[in-house]
Image 1 (cartoon, rainbow, N blue to C red):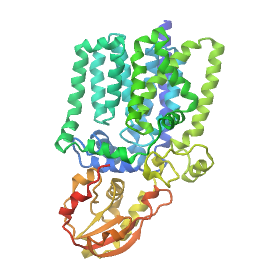
Image 2: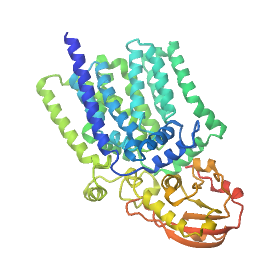
Image 3: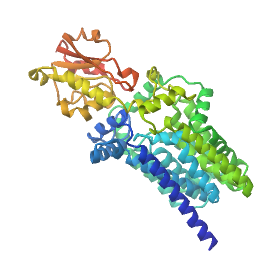
Image 4: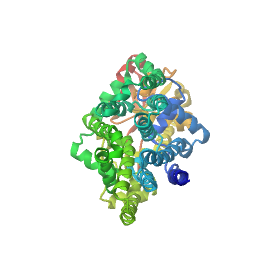
Length: 509
C-alpha cells in the first residue's frame, strides 16, 4: 500500500512539474516572431525530401506542417513546448528509476525546468529541441536494460535513436560517449546481447534515408560542418567551461557535478557509472570540436537527475532537506533573473535595458555576431518583416514588364526564407541564394536576365551588370547587425549566363 502511494505521489509530481514547464513555454512561445532558422525550415519542409544540406528531414517537415496550422510562431513551436514538458516528466520518472525518493524526483524536475540553457533550447523550434528529451530517454532505457535486465528496452533505444538522428545528426556525439562509458565499466556485457544489435539495426534503418540522401548529394553536411569550424569564434577551454556553469545556472553546478561524481561513490548508483563517463566524454568531444555551448546541453538532464538523487541520498534528514529546499529556492530565483537571456519574457525594449544593466552578456560564439546587442536567438526573430517590406518596396519600383524577367538574389538562407514566407503580398518570385539548401534548388525554374540583388558593396556588381540601379537599403533596429545596411540594387542586363555563374555562388556554411 505504501509503495503504491509513493508511486502515485511520483506520478503527480511528474505531471505537475511537466504542466508548469508547459505553461511557462507556452506563455513565451509567441512573444516575438519566427526565427531565422525556423523560416528556413518552413521553406525546406514545403519541399519534402529525405534530407537537406544542413539537416535531416524531420524538423523541416514538422515546421512546414505546424506553421500551416496557424501561420504564427506559437503554433510552429508547439512541438518544442511539448518536448519541454515531456523532459520534465521523464526526469522525475528517471530519478525514481535510479532509487530516488520524491524529494529527489522534485529536485530533478526542477533542475531540468529552470536550467537557462535547457529553457533556451526550446525557445524556438530548431533541430536541437528534441535532443535533451531523446538523449535522456536513451540513457533511461539503457539503465533499464543494463541494470534491470529489461532487454526490450534496447529495441526502444534503437527506435528513439533512429528518430532523433532524423532530427539532428549530433546524436553521434552521445552515441560515441555512451559506447565509451559502457566499454569502460562492467556494463560492457550488454554488447553480448543480440537485442542491443537489433536495436542498433532499427536505428540504422530509421536513419538510413537521410544518410542515402547525403550520399547521393556528395555528403554536403560534412562540407558544411568543416566550414562551420571556421565560422565559430575561438573560445578557450577555460572560457567554455565557465560559460557552461553560467548558462546552466551557477547554483545548479553542484547538482550536475555531483551527478558526475556520485556513481563512483554511492553504491546503488555504481551500475550507472557509464552515464557519468559518457557525460565527460561528450564534454571532451565538444571541446575538441570547438563546438558551441548548446552542443552539449542535451547531456545535462542525465547528470542533473543523477545529482538530484545523490543530494537527496546524502541529505536525508528533514533539517538538511530544508536547507536544500532553500538553496533550490535561490536557484529558482537566479534562473528567473537570468531567464530573459533564454526566453522572451521581456519586451524587446525591456530586454535591451536588461542587457545594458546586467553583468551577463551574450557570448559571441560566431564571428558575424559582432555589433549585435541582443542574443542571436532573439535578434534573429526580429526584422524579417522589415526586410521583406524593404525588398518588396524595391520590387514594386521595377516596371511590371521587367519583373517577369527579374529574379531576386540574396546572400543567406534566412533572407531567402523570409522572402519566400512573407513575400506573397508583393508578388515576389522564389528567392535565389547559394546558401546551403538554396544552392541545390538552383534557379527554381527561373532564367532571369535581371537580378534584384541584396548585398553589401554594390560596386562588386559592376563586372556582372550592364547597369546597376540602387533601389533601397535594409534596416531594422533590433535585427542582427550584419543584416543592416545592405544595398538593394537592380542589376539590369546580366553580362554573364547565370546558369554558368551559379556554381560560384555555392556557400555551404
